[in-house]
Image (cartoon, rainbow, N blue to C red; front, side, top):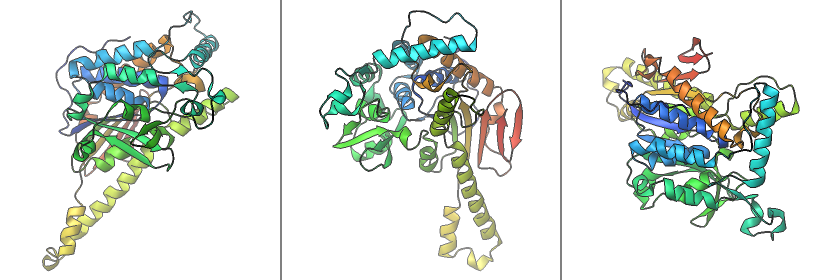
Amino acid sequence: MTDHSSPAPASTPAKAQRVLVLQGGGALGSYQAGAYQALCHFDFEPEWIAGISIGAINAAIIAGNAREKRVGRLKEFWEMVSAPVPWNPITKSDRGRSLFNETSAALIATFGVPGFFTPRFPPAPLWPQGSPQSESYYDTAPLQKTLERLVDFDRINDLKTRLSVGVVSVTTGNFRYFDNVEFKKLGKKIGPEHIMASAALPPGFPSIVIEGEHFWDGGIASNTPLDYVLDEGGRNDLLIFQVDLFSARGPLPVSLLDAAEREKDIRFSSRTRMNTDKNRQIHNARKAVRDLIGKLPDDLKNDPSVEFLREAAKENTVTVVHLIYRSKNYESSSKDYDFSHVGMVEHWGAGARDVHLSMRHKEWLERPQSGETMVTYDLVGDSTETLGGKQERK
């Protein structure tokens, strides 16, 4: 596992609230852990972490530990859940590695993942309808014990770091967030069950009951918390590192396995483009209001309606540094449940490398210039192209 945790002086000049946004993606989540480890090297200390599914688990481990313990706890979790297999792939061919991955995923689907989930016995179809055991293939009780051991929930509820995790109601279909800041106002506390609810992807995992209501993985409705962060960020300037595990872009499938993977990528890829485009439209509208107010005659500038519009037209600045895990040729639709140790190490290293590539561009971390209030930088490759206020690496 690549180690980039050596201390370094602060190198993020943006005077903004620092936010880490973590998408869902199962076994691919070690990419986020590697990215966080590398961010520590650059002294990026998130004040707010928002996650869904495996992103919620990583977020809870980070928010629920002191800074000096976070990387160690992430390593402990990912070493535990990355299943050993009888052999390591020695072939360099994509086909040989693909066979290894599919075999590893099949073993994990059969026997489960230590400290995370175990298969039900008897299987779910043999349990009476309506029983808790009948609704999912696996039991996630081991995850609760893991979270209780690795996460200090008192630290989370003391608001040392803001934590938001996304879930969806099984019966209403409504999407919502469990947020320690909002819970504090209501006299409630975040616990292991809230993190488990965000990671309860059916039909593999059972719904989690909280205050009499059943919740599933928030990724069913939206697999990235970026929209919540943008909506709830208030008037603070925001510097956001968004770490996604599925790419919306990809090649045309040439086989059934390719089609299955591509469908999953599209289904779970983040809605970053939609969110940034929506916020750009809002920015343009606010800017137009400010320009219009500036052109009003003096006798109208103190009108109550104008004062209301002036206040509504105020806005913060947002910088999103967007990292996306890019699948290898030998990975298929099983990549999100292939918890092999080999895959975990690869994903961890990829996350660390992508952060180091991003940090070569110090200007990405500066406050938006030239009247822009929101810019997004996408790390995709080695060259850089600017697209209408967004910078995209290809």
